Image 1 (cartoon, one colour):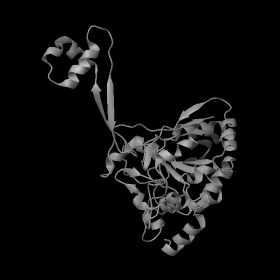
Image 2: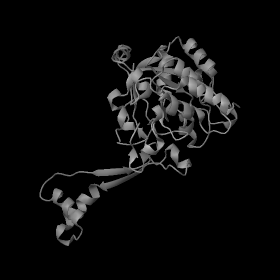
Image 3: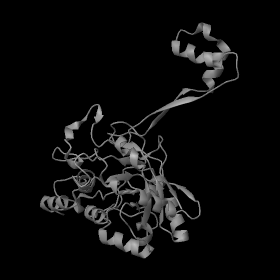
Image 4: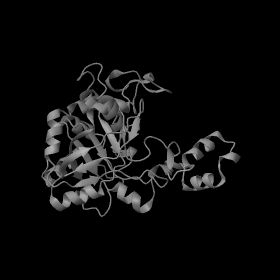
Length: 331
């Protein structure tokens, strides 16, 4: 296990505060230039669209965690309402909403259904905003942590990234296939920087400035089989923050629940999720969690091409510290 002194040395090395100006709230998304977006588009050769998002529903992974719940989907108007209101008419209605709704159905063939959803913004496939994690009372770029209030994040909210898309060249690193695992990378086997280099070399793919690295650990496939959202699996070792920094990666996403390895024995003494602290707070590098990468991994194995155009803009929720995303890969 590393010490806090080890952690602070890495934090000082990877910190990007001021790199893009004292007012910057985009962090490493600044590395996605117009040239990088054009490069990403040029990777599309066969027109295959591969969805990378998981389902937002009652059987999602958050049911195992008390501070986040799975989405609750509620119908607010449905066909049964329409038939009942038309059959019995508005005269018996004392509810103003029901009376208003019934007016839509009266004396015409028009019908509609409506619904709503209540959920944590990080309930399934999502991006962590730079305001999601902090330490020592500072967010990314030195913004004060108390600028995140009950009204939302004044600095580094997820809404600030809309100017970037997020679209760039994506690179899949298929750790499951590299290890020869049947389904997923098991707990107690963190993914190291050296292993990421080895996977990239074996796949014949390079990683450049502004790329989004997508790591296939197989955890989501395992979850779909077991339904156990609390089952741990291997993730990135905390030292991968330096690897991401050295390569000028724009963002990183994975198919597991934390991106990084959850085993405290492989972490930093006295901390929880040290890679989150380094990436979000020091580097300004966003993390994508709960991505469904099985289809992309299968396609990449089939054609031997591990680069693609990634399109993954988060839902623009003003002041939010994370948001849902339905990313797609285009090859």
